Image (tube, rainbow, N blue to C red):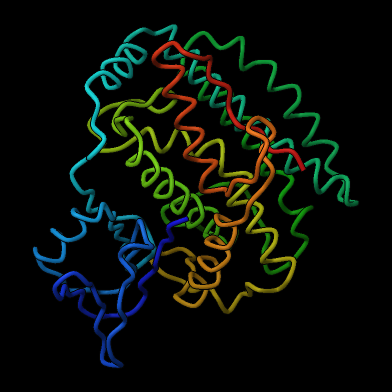
Length: 330
């Protein structure tokens, strides 16, 4: 499986013949172009057209983040799997309100089921999460009753609020009190972790969409508008509970992230460079972790699971098989 690399330092990307390297004051680090599929840039870097041309040739996506760790944009090489046939079917399902609503409900059902699985996991290990489990169980019934995507989004928001209400019980640390979801800027350390992790999920989904016939601009739960990409936001909803939230709980339970990994910036609280590196290391480890897939009967990585989700969506759009979102089982 190809990997991602993360750049936190200042330096220059350069191409020399058929290789790439990153040059800093400490020296050169060669980039194994045949083994990577994306580069995440957090530091200040210089690059040139020859470098970008080589990325296009090797189909490597470059994701940029600003000084605060927020996603800025991507160098998205020319789409090599473009399919007019698939784009037409995507648009057809978006323009038909009932078809769009049906897909949006399936995404929310998958995301909600995964939230429940996360809570059940900790409930079975002694955390009393009865109230949140009951609330989400009741709200899930309202997904099918939603008559529009706007109503569905409101239900999804209520489900997520009930889910987040269990975080303090799971984490149980005075330095990491969570008072509900807020963003830009996050006002506490848990919100900083959620925002950072969600961004990682959005870019991972975008990178996988690039390797399918799907058009990332046409989505169903999120509105397709003037935003460059939105389908990755839909797919990310399914994976955020089982990737981002599980990593947050894992890192905090083992004291791998501490209050010193955060700093006050922009009137809020953000991960510092060291904190980002701790999170990213665990993130990459989690994406490479393999699990036995019930439907296909063999081990697949979490990164591969994202791709499989996109293939299922493709089959739904062309009428081969009804889409059903992935639900984790532990």
